[in-house]
Structure formats: C-alpha cells, structure tokens
Length: 327
Ligand code: RIB
Ligand code: CA
Image 1: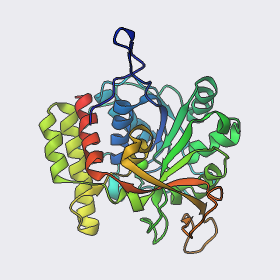
Image 2: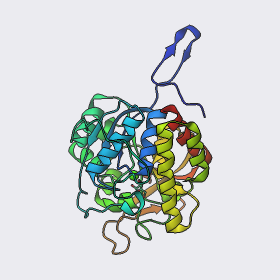
Image 3: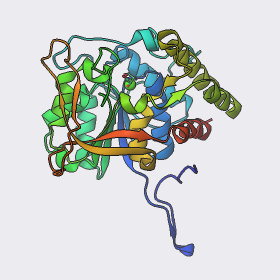
Image 4: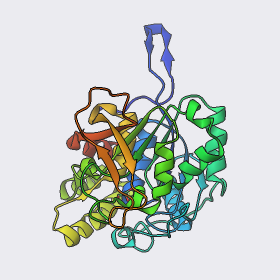
C-alpha cells in the first residue's frame, strides 16, 4: 500500500493532480490502539487536530499520552484537552488493559509540549465552522463529540461525517453486550447517533476483533528501526500480552485505527446500512448498540453505516507503514 502524497501537490506540467487527503480531527483516549490511530491518521490523512477525552484513563493522562505520541512522531498537530467526565454515567477506565498510565509497556520520553487548550469542544466547533469537509473520527467515549453537537447543532450540516470506534454488531467487552467506549458514556453515543449528521460510520467489536496484532507485527515494527518503532513494538507487546492473559489470544485487537481507516483507506472496511439504537435503560443491556439486522428494502430506515468486514492484513500493513513514515 503506497502512502499518498501529503497535501494537494499538483504538478500541472505532467497534468498529475494528487487529490487532497481527507481532513480530520481525531478525538481519542490514548490508549495503545488510540496511539496507532494518531499515527495512521497523520500518515494517510490531513490530521488538523487531536482532542482528548476521559476513557481508558483520566483525561490528564490521555492528553499527556497524545502529546507523547505526537512528539515522538515529530508531528505538528495541536492537542486540545477535553471532557474529564461522561455526560451522565459514572466515570470508568480501562487500566486493566492499558495500564495505570494508559500506555503501559514502553519506556516513553517525558512530555516536552503542552496542550494547545483545555477546550476540545470549542476547538471542534470553531474548526468545523471555519474549515470545509472536516471528518470527526472518535476512538474513545463520545462525550466531546456529543457536547460539541449539542452546543453547535449547525455542525451537522458542515461535517463531512463522523467515524467512530464503538459498540458492536455482536458481543460486548465490558458486559455481554456493551463495548467500553459506549458503555463509558451511553447518553453521548445516543446523542451523536441522533444528531442528524448525514454520514456516521461505526466500527464495533464485531469488526475490530478481526484485526489482531501480535508477534509478527512486533517483528515488522522492530525491523523499521528507530525510537518510534521500538516504542510502538513495545506497546503492542504489552497489549498483546494482556489479551493472552485475558482470553488466551495470540494477538490484541487493533480497534481504533479501523475507525480512521474507514475514512482514509475506505477500501479496507466493508459497511452495511443499519438502524442502530443505544440502550440507555436496560438493567443488563445499558450501553448496548441494538443493531437492527432484519432484512429491509427501505434503506432510508437506517441511521448508520456499520462495519462488518475488514482486510486485516492490509490494516496491519497500514500500522507498520504509518510508523515507518514517522521513524
Ligand atoms: O472497546 C475498545 C475501545 O475501548 C478502544 O477504543 C480502546 O482504546 C478503548 O478505548
Ligand atoms: Ca480508544
């Protein structure tokens, strides 16, 4: 897979026009897989900003982790710190998987820069109002995204679309039916899905569990050479080790880069239109994405594009290429 040339270089002499890369803001909660989502977003798209949210760990730590990844990759992308708590749900974390720091398993350099602001929601609103064709890609709880859409409903007519990692058209992970990002803030997810944004793409666990990274990817990353490749290889070694302990799997699911690929490398992900609701009240089902899979002729009765198939091998290639780009 050849990485696209950045920007809108045109060389009219040979009448070769390189199309502009899709432009995106990445809202995330780094998190091992979020770290790779940042790198894939920067390598294959025009990443105009990163916003951070509570999620895997507290927002202070997710912000620090986002800054660390961006510094290690030598990126010039602003990071804006976001919401520290869900809209209504109690705060939860995923330290069992990602460790107390959120990026356990690697020796990380001390953060040298600071967040550009502590107003992620204001950054999202201002940027989308001033910039054409912005995608909002979310790989953590949807608190910032919901807050931005609630404060500025006009964004739904300006956004190119929303692509999020969350939910599942199958089993959950934090409960039998609920996935972490949506379980962390179900009200936010329901608000985003009902926001009226015309294009909303969802990759859930049913898809991301198909993209496992383990020993082979670690070897490929170490072969790239350099500090970033070592750190990313170490992160996957930790992450894969946790899934081996938890489930006996030979690799860990690379959830978040799939939401990025849905926008930047769309040929890798197969979507189907579905009507999806988020369960808010069920004693055993709160946070579940209820995906209506009944046969349907009238596709106007659908509100999301739900991911079902993925080219896992090429997703793994994209991870390695993104690390190589910035090593
Ligand atoms: O359930 C998987 C999701 O929860 C991923 O985004 C992972 O980073 C965690 O946030
Ligand atoms: Ca995440």
